Length: 177
Image (cartoon, rainbow, N blue to C red; front, side):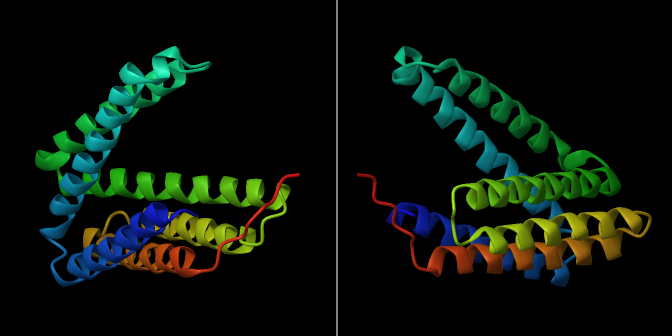
């Protein structure tokens, strides 16, 4: 992991912990801020991916995947930003689905790390399974929005702690001869 990636993971972890604590303290208002933050983050990432495509990836082999990725992420960003005036239950369902997706991605990354002989596959697998478990628990209590907000907030705090752990652990170097 590069220094920039470590800084990005530390920032993501600290922001997740702060947002999780804010959602526990102010469950009625904090989720709107979280949706806006996720939407702006996705929008910046999608637009930067599109800029990367038009400046460099257009001339690369399989460069069109960057175009597709940028368009899809920008579309998700616009969808996320439009959820500010939607009833709270739908927004929480959307957030739970996003959390489940990140959990599934962590599980897939764990299997990939195991396949390549990485040491951190157990940590990633545990993180993914806990994320998916939190989402299932949220879906079971979807009729009570305050309970879902608290469960989701605890999941955000847990994800933040896991990002901090992954950023602060030592790197594995692979030398190719």
